[in-house]
Image (cartoon, rainbow, N blue to C red; front, side, top):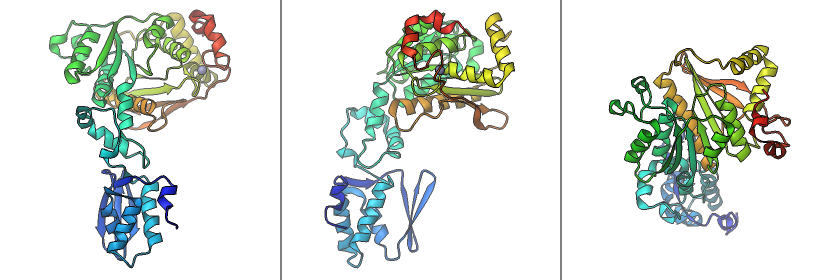
Length: 392
Ligand SMILES: [Zn+2]
């Protein structure tokens, strides 16, 4: 290896061991523990431990090599260089925080410091972990439905540091909501869900900018009017049961907005997402399900024709709600920050209360001829909503 080894790779900045990497010194080896993994580094003469301890943010890569060699003159320079390079390539080191540019104020840096190290565990060397939190702060998120899933999701979004929220519901709070709808309390019974949810969220995080819609959605147009301009939509509204999915899908595909949806089904919950233009959409899914299974075809047609729903409010159990909200918000973080690719596209995932498993219930693919997201999509959009949604 030649001088300039690190310069050529763009590794000229100061570096430190990530706080999520825990080093252990054992006889003749160093063990690094991170994210459930253990890396074992042979260390017969203590050079590796010295190197690990030198990753304290005060030196750049070449400076670390020089420091180690000054203490361990017998060590081979090329081997030490390679070891430092391995720390960098395996994402075990980061830039010291004082060297990171950020638009976050001091309060946000403290409030969300645990988020930052979470994102930091995924960053490559030179990447700015604060940028992920900035994306959360800047994103516009629309949540349709402020019931069980909605309130858990809203609380999680506020805790994450989402600032720009639009929320929608038409219901008032009832006593039977309090088994799962965590933003509400007994004194709130009879008040509007959206206004009470907004009040609670602002108590928790005063800097939020929350727009409310107390509205019963009745068409794709209604959904489009609410979701337009947002970066992501989370739909956990369950009414009207047989239509809301179609309207959501048509509106979000039309405006190119990714959405995540989910719901409870007695002792299981289901959840999925659609990335318009990239993944299959809800119409692709239903078409695939009908092709695979004639019973699904008959039931979905009957539901639509006769507008069949549960006779009484369906069961809704808080533990299913909490797990599902966590899944949906995790997916939202992936879309908003780009820290990892979405995991709920082209599939319906399910969480089952009975065995506490999370699995894949159904899969589908993007249909190039889909009447909602197919390749002649722009032409279709010009036709207007009724043509797009009413031919199932
Ligand atoms: Zn489609």
